[in-house]
Image 1 (cartoon, rainbow, N blue to C red):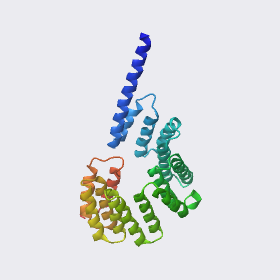
Image 2: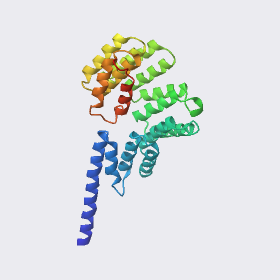
Image 3: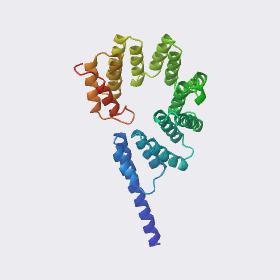
Image 4: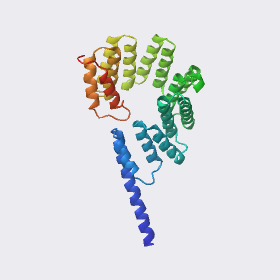
Length: 285
């Protein structure tokens, strides 16, 4: 009896220790310290599905898509009904398709679509999966399973889950059809449905700039900055827009320099992207 009690205590202590390590790894991941997070996770001899998923996310963020896929697949074996794991596999195969040779890209793209569709099948209310599958249908050619008809149908499904995301999807569809006034109207409807979401304000600001309405765009970016002061996402989006439009480049430089020293999360564009943008600004601009 004493031996059994001791064994249970040892197992419990081990589980608690791994739980603490996993929490530490998750904290490092959220601070975009992906290599450090992996060091913590790789020290564990018997990862569970949650650990494998986090390993996959770290490798994804580091651009090692082969290892990311391997980790996500191991997690999916342990949790085959997880919509989120199917979603991450779709995203990873999508990135692999973007970076693969022309010979391998179509196969990876098809796998991305299959996993996005599986994610939606497993959870029809997974908003991120619905959005990613919509994006795939909108961007991919027909021979890879894309198409406007599929994107339009997916937009309606998005509307059943998120009215704001529905109007954003409709804006993308209208823009693709060169119905620019309709696209702007849909973006404004998306903002009206979610006025507290700074991303909705950024979407409108970027679109106004795309249409050459810079004064309105700048005012809308200012509204975003007031809604979310010191938001890295606002800084990056505004700087990126200025650089694309080749104006206010000195302000863009200042925003990007501030961005690279901000506390970022995995949801923010990588610092490397900001550094690339900085290199696009001519000296003395």
